[in-house]
Length: 320
Image (cartoon, rainbow, N blue to C red):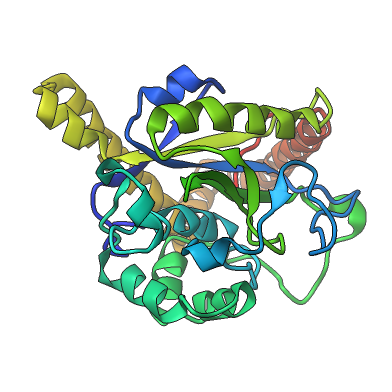
């Protein structure tokens, strides 16, 4: 997605352990994106006059060139979180003046134009401009999951509502570790932090741990992505052919997974059902088809019951 936006030399790498050493293996680091279950049983967004659960609101950060926008539409928090990191690492931005060159990113013409256009706006208007950007919206929607059976005319009962998850970003800027969450009124400062990967890795981990500790111990549905330099670049610099081959293979897998996620399989599924029904008809006539359908219904009911039990049991789920 970010390559389609024109961003060069950046990738997102999933982390399987929450420790500074794992982060430091991916230097240079630009930030992290954290996925968690959105709390629906207590207020989430604070007010300008109140304090967040952790850290301090910093309403003056925009004056120092920090990019921050409110999230004004649903189902865009992932895109907004990654943009919160990228737009604060633009080599031509004011915030980049305080950062080492290794922290600079070529964000491309689309995002650079958007950043320059929205630089004088407040977070609410920035969010509106972001949600109405035709180029960004088109690329975002191109990677959306196909949901051909979604019925937007009905609302599920409370007992049927699925858990909601939210993405936020953490990045160092202007000598401060910032939490950038479009559902909050301002960026949240977590104290001093220089722009080096080592300092960021050491200081962001305790912040994430404190956030996780606010949840019950049975809640394990969290996900952490590091925003780092394209690992293929380092492999080429070090002459690591095996690593380069691994990274290239990883991208082929990503492309295949994205294609599967976006594809509408209704036509394919219909043809499979017709082919199987015809085969059953030839083997045993109408009764064989009815038996096959009844067995399929039982299997489907069983899977739905197992899925419902799994959700109540707190299984890992990082789909957003």
